Length: 429
Image 1 (cartoon, helix red, strand yellow):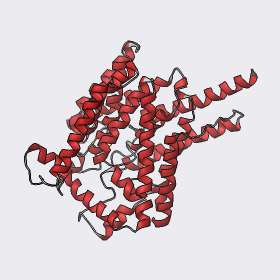
Image 2: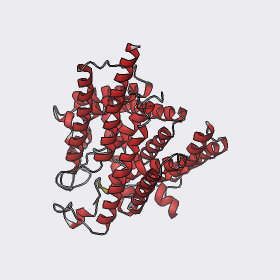
Image 3: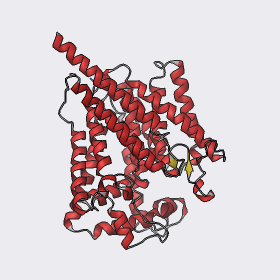
Image 4: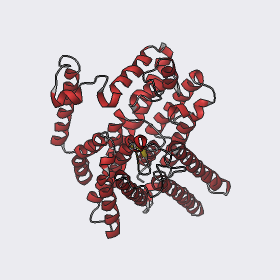
């Protein structure tokens, strides 16, 4: 009996630590700044590093103080993430620029150090009993509060109101690209794609169970985020559109325990039609005009020069040796390549502006396969779960993954996505 009490005590301690960590990341990370927008990237990277290191040290202190540690075998998703970290580490050390690969300022601070923190945080949260705790849903209070504040800031900034002097170090031209506590408009799009769908799903699926103040918080936060959508880039509609399409499927699955067959078949058919149209418009019908041609034909000007960037980065990958194609060029390889073969005269390219292509060149075919494995196993884990919060987090993942095709991994929103994915890997019981 004493052994059971000791195990329950340890479980409670580690669960509370996980809850506090996730709540802090969801609430504070989207709002942290140091010197306005001037060093927002560095401020976000430093905060996430500090809060994650604090979480890890707190678990070490619990172990030192006598709380027994119960480590389970890593699940498939976590194993894939560790494989990705290993491949990325090997390629970065083999082909990267010395100590710079750890911090990777020339890779949006997504170096070996940050990737290690991602892997550790996911493993430790997956090992916790966070969903066993009745307070687990409270992590969404933090997400809603931060979304509400950022939504209000976004509305104010969009209308030229800057009460905190966030634009004091920026030109008028630059200031048009930065809003709220996230910063760059593309990253704001990723942020809205993360939490608006999740909070809407929780509000709808648990409407009868939620208290009045919880409903008010979630609904107000969503409206604030939606009202400030004009401040974000058009990539937000990719994420939100994906969520809107999948929302009915997940809602029915949550109530009945299975996905509606007819709706699933329709989605598969629509996906096949879209892919066929995409291939057709980029081959035989490349010169076609109209709305379809505008959005489906990928040329050099498509998506604010993304078409040109993708061709540039893919050409870099084609020039890799067989070994580099397998494990990648390591952290910062895009910036190194662009310094020798510039695509833009006024700036150095440090990202592919497509997270999947970025992973491919940085960690190769093996790294991309491991990363996709992590995402797929997280999705399967959530699909099997009757937990409404996990299904909301599944919307978070799918929405983010959709907009990631035209966006960048960076310290503003990628840590939020990783933390959401970590919650999915935690067992329901």
